[in-house]
Image (cartoon, rainbow, N blue to C red):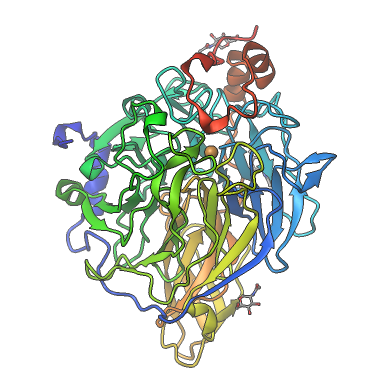
Length: 611
Ligand SMILES: *[C@@H]1O[C@H](CO)[C@@H](O)[C@H](O)[C@H]1NC(C)=O
Ligand SMILES: *[C@@H]1O[C@H](CO)[C@@H](O)[C@H](O)[C@H]1NC(C)=O
Ligand SMILES: CC(=O)N[C@H]1CO[C@H](CO)[C@@H](O)[C@@H]1O
Ligand SMILES: [Cu+2]
């Protein structure tokens, strides 16, 4: 699509002018960064007990995992578990006990460090209807914390299966899109083309109710799990199917961007990976998006006419979000192989790991004419690729020294950077229920160790529990003898599901090393638009590309996001809760799953007042 300047809202133009101020670099300052080359490690250690459809690191030692309700071996409260906590140092697992079905939910942290998981699927077995689920988790170190749910009072306005979410500058979370009931792909009859906030806001006249998004109508059918990235001016980059836009949630204004090049569809079930490239002082915190993989097959045909053997896309496309960058358009590169549901993981050295997924087919299961077991995809990509955004074009992708895994990571697999710097890979389950067929329900965890893991590492102490915007703090550092300088990268490790990585973000901080190299004066991000208030892992990275352990802090004050009780009351008064919905709808059998898109299963949006 051609971008006309008249489409740009005034606030957009203003912020672009600020971003493109004279004398400042306009794109990711293309200065090559050092990184450690050599052989990567790969170990398979521990199991997740439930299949890792969704994964989030919640502390320096714990990850939590959500699955769909299915016959997992791990038990809790007399039934098969569908969520678990992993202790990373010991590789052990502890079952968690949500009430509702978390199938294809999203997740984000609030500014106070509480994690919320929202949306999901209707009732299956022991799991209550999770379509409006909103589950809270406060991380703990003592093995006593669990998911908290109060479905009558704390819930979404409406059904959301396959929504996305993003933490905003005020520490609240926006939840966008999804279907009111589910299947292989979205469609006009099941679409929920709206967004909402948690905690609910009274904004733009909607007073806690869901807010329409034309973009989520225009991007049908393939627009499940839209990619969302909070930009340094507070607005949100959103991409889905073949389109992209910037959403100003404060004014409910959508500004369309050039579409994804070459007809590539990039959201579920044509899942690409997407990442906001590192925001650094050198690039003046100029936002640049990269989207890799996806597919060019039609989103309008009966999925049984699609094939597990159709090559996915090998395209990576980058767009700099300034006036000049948008005018220049997407810059296209080619991965060494085609990839569907690839995960893009930011490394502490500023590079991006492309991991998991398959070379052919589409996301989901039980749809295509030539399923492998139940998988809609085939030809797993077993070797990750590392991408250096600052290397010259043509030299950015490399699998040098990276071992191939023997474990296919198909649909419903996940990956995350860990605080220690390894990359945790888990999940894979293109199946209705627990299965041992080809592309089975996978519980084994793997840890990739980049070569920096085998070098003498910098260490530090003195990180405050909270670090407010614009303030400075001092770390006591011990550097390897060969290091002459360091940078400080804070990373939001985000929430991984379906190849989409909510809230993942790397921001480089201003830091000054003392002449004796023992003390490092660091300045926090300027505001919550550069780094939304909430958890961050702080990596001190040497000039040779060796990161420290990433200790956890909370950026901001750790305060809870604003609560508007009147908006909550209005939402509760004007929307139905899951109990009423459950009565009004036929509950799909556990085997109808993501295997079909049946328009007759439309569930009316629960918008009618209950009174
Ligand atoms: C971090 O990784 C290193 C290298 O594998 C290991 O020696 C160390 O024990 C790990 N630290 C933690 C806290 O897991
Ligand atoms: C964080 O804020 C939410 C929303 O107000 C609240 O429900 C939750 O209890 C808070 N968490 C903490 C740790 O205070
Ligand atoms: C937008 C909307 O439907 N508002 C209604 C919500 O519920 C209150 C109390 O029942 C009504 O007064 C509003 O009109
Ligand atoms: Cu799914």
